[in-house]
Image (cartoon, rainbow, N blue to C red; front, side, top):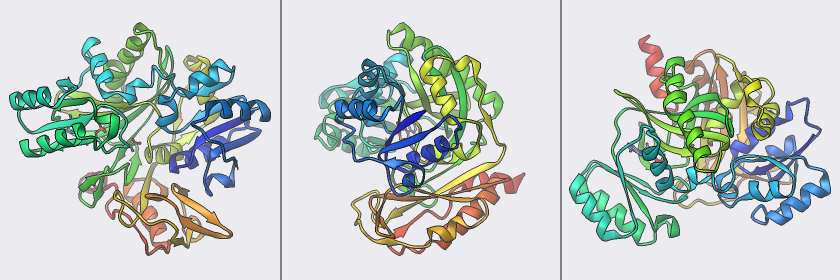
Length: 426
Ligand code: AMP
Ligand code: GLY
């Protein structure tokens, strides 16, 4: 089977390598891809915002299945347009992708179908948002309703921070994404990411992971797209995973059917595990980046087969088998990230890192220039390693980082710290 993968980040590099292991795959295309993906796929310069061009490419090349990595094309309805052309795709329809595209939509679904989440209000103007803020007080969380590349959320410990976040949203800092705002109660607990495939009716637990959203060591500094991750997340015991399936994921599957927009693709549930159990922070409707890089390192079995079953409605026949190993990834980013960065600096030593035991380096924001690899974005490389424990995976990943020669980049030095501390205590 010929497959087209849409995207160009570390997540897509990990997806490409996992898809390439499938005996069902005959040829993999990627649009636009990156130099890591190019090791296993033919990269094509397609404008993925032009759905007609994507359909025409699939017809021309005989592509039967499209795997969509990022949220943008999903929210723009690429899966609907492919379906209308008779081409199967992995990912939700435009209406089902509202679970990620509108935080207010998801909060309303939770309220209507009794899915545990923080108490909230939705506001379209500053005056009513400020009035609500005055009633509930800080700590409080202010969120731009729409897609804001992970930057539209402020966890405000004081009223001043909350007021400033509201002013940002309604002042246009996040464009139309901030025209509506969700204000929600601050949740206490430990965060985890939980992934489940869903074919419209059947949901199948996939894996858990823990991200590190803040840019600095010790979880300090501004939020980013994610500076590193490991899988599994120790808080997601088998019992907790089953609670999340029973209390959050399966009720959402039913809710989306009842709302007339059944969900197909992957639920990426951002969870807060507190004293009363799991609460939903948010849904994303695609694989996480960098969570995918670590989850797929642990997948034993055929990813293409699972994604096809998701699209075709046959997940009830499938199982997900994961290695008990831990996988951990360290994101190397260009100096300045998550602010503005300079592109074009040279990166050396990727092969040296990959020669180390258990280490894989995924490309997240690079471009090739002859034989050289140059930085081409904020998050640039994902140095990933497997180990029998988090401690071992962490040591291997940082050995990989040490082999890479890139003075214009940086990374956190403590990815996995919580789990490593737990292993020390055990
Ligand atoms: P989101 O983009 O909604 O996942 O939010 C980004 C980050 O903000 C989350 O990963 C949490 O660390 C934090 N956050 C979001 N909502 C809450 C909440 N209600 N209580 C505490 N922290 C939150
Ligand atoms: N790592 C968080 C995300 O993919 O949204």
